[in-house]
Image 1 (cartoon, rainbow, N blue to C red):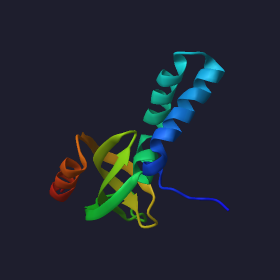
Image 2 (tube, rainbow, N blue to C red; image 1 turned 90 degrees about the vertical axis):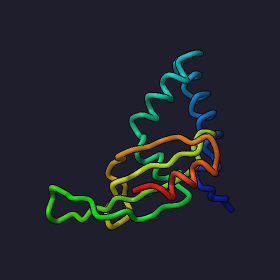
Image 3 (cartoon, one colour; image 1 turned 45 degrees about the vertical axis):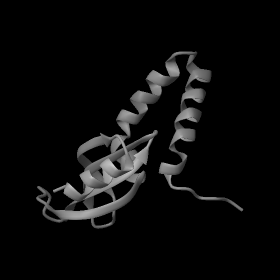
Image 4 (cartoon, one colour; image 1 turned 60 degrees about the vertical axis):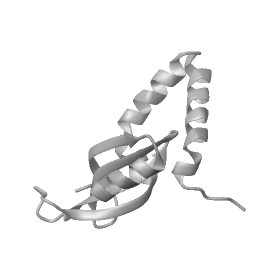
Amino acid sequence: MSIVQPIALASDRVMTALIAGLELEFGRGAGEALASRFMEAEDVDIHWDARNEERWIGAYGSQEGDVELDRIAATGFLDGRWFVALFIVDGDGNAHGMLSCRTCASADAAALAFAQAR
């Protein structure tokens, strides 16, 4: 039997394990820097997977005529911080980009920023 948890609940453990594994492979001190680079490269997908609430903002004008994209506001908790972000998402729920992302000091601040997202 396995237990599935959202990435937001497990993000602290994931980051700790990622840093530990990278330090084991590349030496002490390199883990945090490499983990940071990894997070930058996968930023959109990691934030999209860590969302706990989302709201449709509107259509996103696409250059590709056959793909319909939407702007979606989302809030979530990742690496010990609340965030609110604006994503470009296709009809299958796959994030194609992140237009903006801001961190918030608390869940209440994130909820307010999420409510005001346009």
